Structure formats: structure tokens, C-alpha cells
Length: 255
Image (tube, one colour):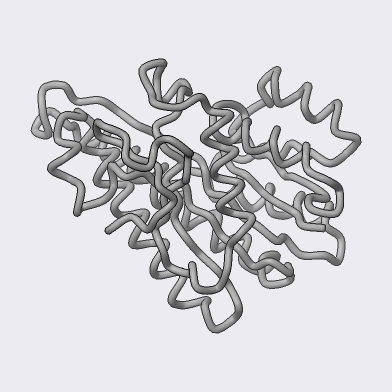
């Protein structure tokens, strides 16, 4: 029985991850800690109420260290003597600069860096004692192909420079944690969940959030030590060689 903690679980990718995880057998998933920065959304509240204690809402503002400290303490109490098996760092922010990179303001850039990169470090480091006690010792950072330097020219049409830069930084943060904790049995990886139809992804996206997250969980179910420090794509049948910007072939994404 594995325990999970998902940041940004009130909507979009985080909410769908929580929904699909709690549908799995108790032998696979015993508890999901779903964090939001404020009160849970109506959808998350309903999920918590119907879960018979398997979904636990945890208030946590990932940009505030004191809030993270309280959240970790709450999770520790819930786990008692057990550890946390899987951390999914899902919180993210994306701003748009249609007038180009020079219009990207300092405040906007720093806020996005704090949410997309620094908060992941805050959460991961704060939860590390509980993760070390867990059995799976798995950390998943939700990234994006827009953070791939190799693919940067392909995505020049997307007017989201701060998002691209910060996700590239998240990828390096992933590698640093992977290298440092590999000897302790951890598997730390970045996954691109695809362009999904969420508030952040918009209705123009490639995939329904349900199918994208189903592919994410399929990928996670096969995590091995060899995946440590990798940047992986989801696999969606029929999208392996799709025309256009995005393909979902389940392969490794170049940094």
C-alpha cells in the first residue's frame, strides 16, 4: 500500500491525479494527501468526503515556508510511524508575454520562478525525512517539453518565456536531487504530462485531462531505478508520430 502527496490538487492535473489514484485498489494506494493553497475546491471536497479517509486535504501555500512546515507536520501525524512513498510536485504557474521576452517583468519572472522551481525544492526538502521512511522513495516533478532546451526553437511560437525558463530550471533541480539521493534508493524524475485541457492548458490543448493523467499514472506504475534523473514523455496510442508540435511516444525527452 503506497501513500502519495500531490501539490496543487484543487483543480486540473492535481485534481485528476487524485481522482484516478483513489480509484485504484487499496492494496495499491492507501492514502493520498492533496494540498491546496487555501480551502479545497468543491470538486476536491466531494472527493475527500467520498473517499472513506483515503484522500486527506492538506492546506499548504508552497511559497510560504511556515505553511509548508505545518503541512509536513499534519502529514506526519496522519502517517504515524509510516513514511511517505511518492511525492508529486505538481504546482505550477504560467504567464503570457505576447509582446516578447523584453516585456517579461522582473516581478512576474521572480514569482514564476518561486512557484515553478523554488517551491519544488521547499516541498521536497521539507518532506525528505518522511520520504526516506517510505518504501517507494519516488519523487515526480511535473515538467513540460516547453522546458526542453533541445526543443526550444520548435516552441518559439508559445509566448511564455518565464514558464519555459523556469521549467528548464526545474529539470536541472530534478537531476540534482536524483544524483544526490540515488545512493539512498530514490528515483527522482521529471514527467511531461502533455498539453492537457485544463485552466492552464486551455481548451485548445491536445488531450483531455483524463487521458493525459491516465498515461502519467501508467508511466508511474512502471518506475524503475533506471529512470532516476530522466525526463520522460507520456505514451498515448495514436500520438506517437502525430503531426504538429506534440507527440506522445513514451520516450525520453532531450534536455
